[in-house]
Image (cartoon, rainbow, N blue to C red; front, side, top):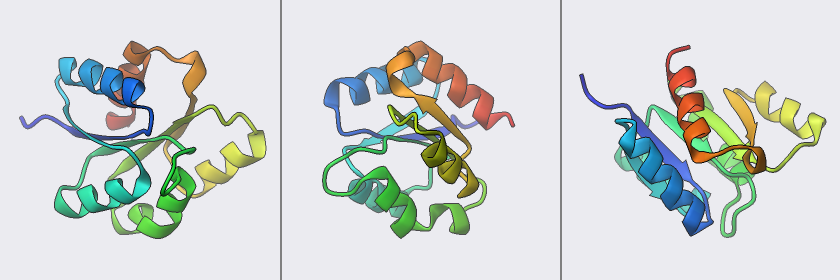
Length: 124
């Protein structure tokens, strides 16, 4: 069975690398992008099974990525987990209503916990 593909969209290099290492150790095929614009380019080349999307990034934010990529409309099988420090209930509900699979508060999550979220999302 082929490894599931995970795209990590995160501007903070340390977090992006830590998440990539952990998810690779859990058997996922991981690619990364420093912002939404780079992520859009990568998705054109290879569609991931799941996207871990930060919201606050330079060049193209997570929200702009969701607006401009149409990923949730074009590819219903792709799951998106928004992991950010956004805790405003209205903003989170808006994300979920747009088709985002889950929202996770980044500051309260260790990299190993992220692997559990990915595993659970892929098996739903």
